[in-house]
Image (tube, rainbow, N blue to C red):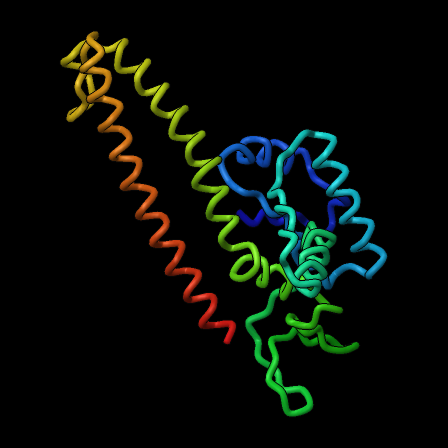
Length: 219
């Protein structure tokens, strides 16, 4: 999940802290400073430091980059270190295509010059894109499925089981087997697992379709 932080707030606002604390156990949070072209380079650096300080102070868990394998190339390790050092990513967005020196680029035009969205000296957008659809795509999927989703599923099943055990058979949700026997509880859990597995497969299919679209647009 990309969580956009205002460039004008000098760190996280109370609503950012509350929102991120409610989400950080459910999704991978990747903090992003939007509209970074409104800030000078020193302001961007100070803002990044302040956002990270607020994240640590409030115990917010953001996406944790995995350590590089020993057999990775030096170039990959260098790029990975650059990505880690760029958190939170300071990005600029634009839908306008402009031609500069015979090259068509996505940019924002100002009286004083041009901000090239894909120029790494202007914006972290290229680094963010590289991370999301390139170097860390599989790890993001694995952490989402093996940690966040499994935690959510276990908590949901526990709550559902407690709720259903407190209901009479006529009050129970259709399709769920309510019973005080172990067999009834097993059937109920299995059905909940099946329903949630179907939901996650649907979400994964949608995510893969979005990633293919992003990759096609990036070409």
